[in-house]
Length: 394
Image (cartoon, rainbow, N blue to C red; front, top):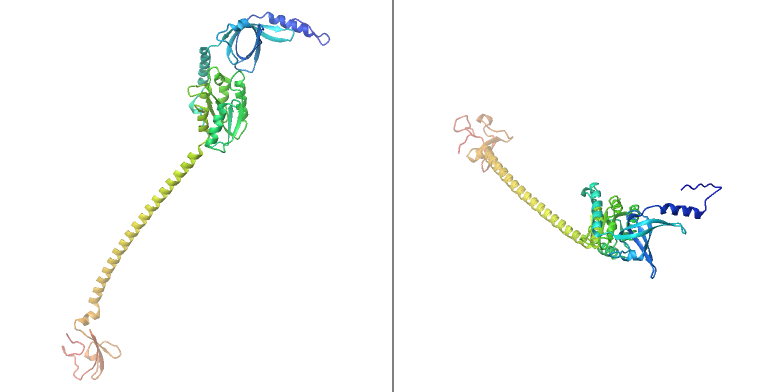
């Protein structure tokens, strides 16, 4: 600005303010896109003030507009709406405030919003943020569930009531934030960052009820979608209704059609789990019973086969014994005696094989098949064929 100053010769505020005003006054009118965070107008006044917020960053500008310019905007603008403002920067020297003097305001149509969403979607999809392989499974029973939702919203109540109805002891770490309007993106991203910093939070749910494209626009914001994709904990997106598909749905690990559906996905149903346990217990018992019955039958079968084999072996052994007994009977002296032969022994037990083995008058023992006889050797005992004692025939 060409103003020369020093500690010894500083410029007064009025001079600096005037110079800044002159410099800004030389700027041309420009087109600006943003989202209306606040509109202030008082009855009877011809001027309105608008806080125009950046759709990506936490920055805003003050816009001054004549009410006759604001009133011709169709459809009428409202807080939370995205608009394009044509105006010239000016510096309010009295307060040292920069503002935009609006000459024209145009609402951003739904078509333009959808085109912007499609542009962001194509960009993030090309980077792989929506890829199926990036999706992570949810824990079966999380230690703690992070929940981001609107303050005292129906979506918040739906998640809490349905989740606790399924698993009464479930624990939540809740962040109630703005889920619509100019501050929604920053609020949700900050809440997501806080919950990810808590190691006991195993899953995070972002829940919001239905609304228009404009209402759900923050959940297609590039900054928020990237934050969801980078989340440490798996994220469940429960935004709007079944037909609503903001870009957060594509980046989340699980998309729930409604907040109630999200509750069903994050915790198991204790009643169903108990029924499953009972069914599994019954199945195990039935399986064990069938196994025991099968084993018992196999043992009985083996026992029966063992008994049969033992009987066959006993029968074979009995037959062998009888055969051997018969052979022994044939070969034994008793069998010889049965055929009429006799065994002659002296009193001292010697077998008499010849008349010469005894003397006349000697007492001898004669054994026949059915008993024993004592005899005395006569004088006629000679070695004569057919008459010798001990060689009798039947």
